Length: 306
Image (cartoon, rainbow, N blue to C red):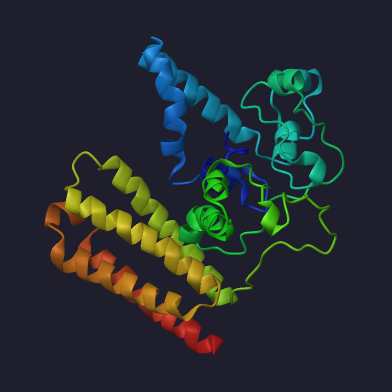
């Protein structure tokens, strides 16, 4: 359903947008994924499955699928007949015509072999989506699929087609728009998306990412004692960080403005507004020094870039 029903695909597509294929791809998940998964799991409760069994099964299934997102492991020999392996899952992420909608397996490849959706890995694979995202913007990555459906539904002529656009397969198009799309062979000239950010900007973002990742860990450790207002600020600050960095990487002027606002707000809140007990894990002086140095570094980088 995540690949063949448009409005569910609009959520799951985030996982497939990466043109790289490594362990980080496994962690690339939509913010709406839980909403789309829940309806498939809830009937199990009505059938009497204990919650612990459900949670354990989902956890094992999810953790298993992390390690198969790699190009380092080529084959697991006889296990390839039973288990979903890196080789099988590379096929699933491929956008070459022969790989589209193949190897849906979570842990066991036997289901694809039984139902005719199995495809052996043969030759190099192109990763990503048929229509590349071409953006580092996390908000656009999570909403681009929905925008595509809205455009398709608006362009359709009849009410039936407008409604069907939401549950149709991703390649479907009404006859008035030329009919369903045919997946073409990936041209050799296709290049991975790159915005070629200034090296200084890349180093700045890398340093900021380490700090923000540390904040994420601290927030998770302190989540039971954090006031809701503080938690909301930190979450908003983290999201603003990702948005600002994507814009900086794409040479967008508003990214510079957002980054200065983000750092300025962090400086103000951590030194003046947050209660002392909240700021204790990251001393106020260190927070002020970090924000101040970050603003100065960004100013110097942009000045040299010009």
